[in-house]
Image (tube, rainbow, N blue to C red; front, side, top):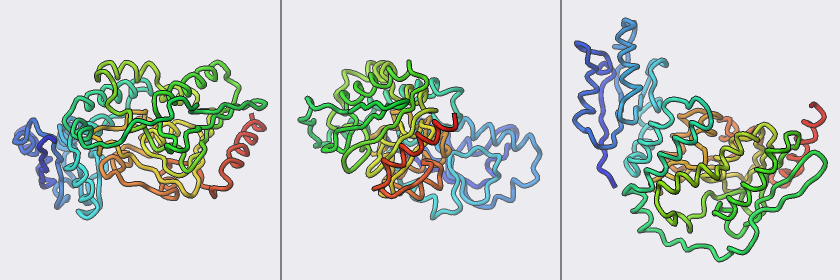
Length: 353
């Protein structure tokens, strides 16, 4: 793991002195290390300051080579990566950063500015993900991991059913909580490729078993030949791109564990219906990685980059009602009613077109 730094400064140090923002000198002392710039204290020094001074602070925060974290009543026009009401709220994020500094910093830098479009965001995400696959934190996780490859390689991963005007895709790997392996990716890719040619067809996506999708199959992690090749394959068989293209006519039902790709891909859909037993999380930082299935685009668009970074830094799971409050899902229903509700949404949409 790389050495990391937590740099605490007063808000007044964001104001330029002879053209230099003093907080930048603090970061320079830790150049080459992943860092958090934790700004805490009295924010009154920034009140009623000349526009050019605030512009200097904005420019500094926009290019700071550190996770920028504000505590307290920071002006809303200052572009911090994370904002906390107080130290107690900020501490879990700082602790998460110290556990996985490289992916946390990489994630914050990646989502600091929204991408110009989905494809640009996916390319940047994949490049960052691939870079981290060559990093010490991912290699340390691989050394610790005892997860064996699955022994169900001959079993189908999805089931596709058709009805008038709609296609249902069901994930059928319940014994592995529908974890996304290469075979499932390829089967999904082929099914969605066909649907790109059927612009009038509604798409329902759900899963069998105790969970919608527990994320990427950890038994396959690290099996790529090299990060550069993995980057090319990831973009060439991008489920995220397909879900973004098809998202306007996709209705996704999620339940149980929805980790990593299990929430990143559904978040592209126009309608996400969550069962009340859902648990959503982004565990990638614990592996030394960032979301790699489009989540830095899809989740950030749904609920903002701060929420995305909260999930990434802490690795915590949120339940259905929190996901609804954040806008990460669109409604919550009892688990027993999930499937019927998906088709109700489809029928309602077909009547209103």
